[in-house]
Length: 404
Image (cartoon, rainbow, N blue to C red; front, side, top):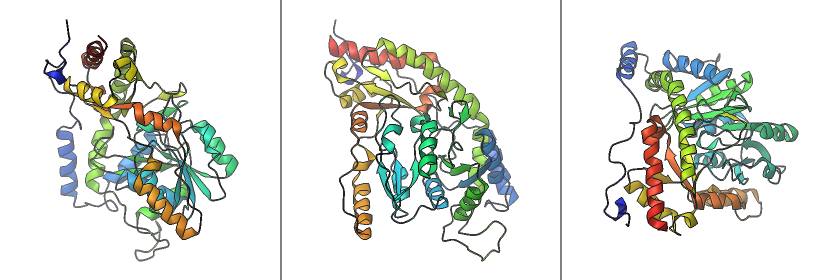
């Protein structure tokens, strides 16, 4: 008997909703009322942002934290604090959000892209040294989907080549590499609290470090170039105002109180889902590096093999899976090195420096990941095992229909 998929007019596997995101209750309302009544609506005289900086730094096993407006700004703050400037080069991954590259380009620096590993989708340390030139100033690995990159290898490379090591941990709240939380395993680490993130205030960002000098430089960049103990109209560096508002600090503190329990639930559901998906050949979860002691599971990464689904394209599978009630997403559609805005700005900087233009850095593994990758959002992992079963049931149903 033929199977009538929902995309073809059949009854979907799932009709009920998924866990809401963000999770909130009256605790957030009380926290915001506290800020209103305090009259301190900006961070310098307030208590919420300062308290969140201390609490989050402690949680991530870091000495210092500097909060800012968003995760994109946090990257720029860290790069400025590292001294990255016009004409410098920063080596990073091609499989990441545009902010990782645009933060470099906004400073006049050139992002150089090193290919990724097929089993993690993180930057491949073995390819990084091919990209190092006399202009290279920093390494910027990304903990994609909340999966820590190989920080042992990147620290070794940074040390041997005298490079600043900055972790883009925008998706990696609470994640651990070899038993140590990410964010201060390098010289600095940046986080995002944008609406989709595992810890959110709608927007917001933060830089972590164990180095007091970097902490002071970040503070200065966030605070229009002032020094912490300097005069109000004393500006020692060219910078902007990236301060986080007290509203965001208050919401983040209440959200933070739920983070550990949510992280544990994501980990348990991910482990169950990954095992259950073994029933569906051709839809393979990316399990990552065994040295990762905790993934944040900001995204469930899936590798789609069309041959296991009757030759149907990934886009066809997304439509069918979504119709069955599973909100799956395509991953990044192309390596970041091929984004027109990145390529055009890079060419402009090279031209101004009198450097010959070059084609985009070749990243063949990333090309394959972009062609086969799928994502499930972290909020789906806040459900229960029956929710995970629905994901597997829907995938298996599509496969049976297409290979019959």
